[in-house]
Length: 48
Image (cartoon, rainbow, N blue to C red; front, side, top):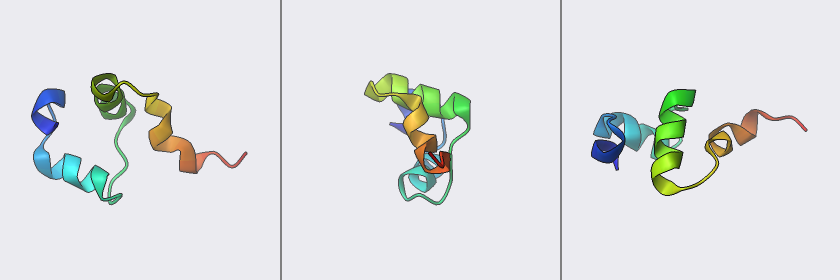
């Protein structure tokens, strides 16, 4: 996955474990590859 989205394996692993929140650009790369809405990465920030 990391290679396919051009991010480091360590950074991707941190995202998977919930230790890091990806930037919008990285979230878009991952979601494009996996075919889901990139804003799901930031769902926990929405207070509504």
